[in-house]
Image: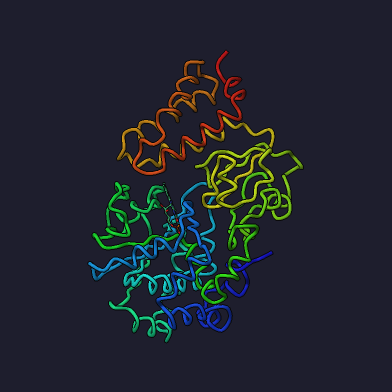
Length: 411
Ligand SMILES: Cc1cc2nc3c(=O)[nH]c(=O)nc-3n(C[C@H](O)[C@H](O)[C@H](O)COP(=O)(O)O)c2cc1C
């Protein structure tokens, strides 16, 4: 197993232990050649691990190029409120120093002077551990050396997010950091140009940032070789549902889904057969047993019509009602919609009503037709991806499990 982020040397909350083991060298290398950081990240092909898979070096470069405003922000996104996703809380709780070192290197690369750790309020241990870890960094000599290389003094804030799922969307996070309700903003302007208080703002996921010190320390080629096939690096998969050993598993990016479930997850509970896998939390198309061989990387999962998202895999076994499961997730999305875009608020409300009706045997064929039609009309009509995510789950469940929907209708 290629553990880097979850390697025992990367864990722990004591800064001197981190610096005497795996840590510090990445930042030292960055300090010796700040102008070269972004090309190393580009060569490593580090991609955003918060769901989008966007090349990190591109975002960093955009922000680095902004010079009109003296302040620039980095939001370290640890909102993590999607069903089945729990990797960032694990990293923040057990390995805060590698995340903070990653954020410091990122700040240096893009000349950012305001770092905000934005953490789900229910993760109180993550919040406590990051606060303590930041205090430790602020008094260490590497931090002083970093300050000397930044044009404006660096400050680090650790804040609890508002606790809404939508607050993890990048522009909603910007609103939250400003002290407002997390309503997503329209784009453009993109955060790299105008984010927190109109300043250039970079938003990166916690797992993305955790990789950075290791890449700087060991080099881009080392990172590329960690992956499987054309994928680079490792991925933390959040495995849950009907497997014997649910948990967080760091494996090479590109590990087949079957290996994650059988070798690391211990196989299926009660030796049942797999019926479906909800990927990327519950906001992507469902994978079915025919996709069990899929390499878990951005491109391969996309080729199967789904997306890797955050790397969350919720496994369900034969005997589980898909309509009930989809209804539960859509209830969550309906509740989580911020209400700013009427098609999203009312759309998720109506589909949640329809699904609850179908699930409880009270729906007619007309209701099912309405659900199918809404799946054609609603995608793309919200400002952010929340509505699209909800619709993808429903649409794919209709494609693969239409018979279950039909047999749930009232006689
Ligand atoms: C509804 C919604 C919720 C999101 N929640 C999170 C989250 O909790 N954490 C996260 O890192 N990204 C989340 N994202 C993705 C962010 O918008 C953004 O792409 C990400 O933080 C960028 O970091 P990365 O490039 O390192 O992946 C969410 C997106 C949407 C549409």
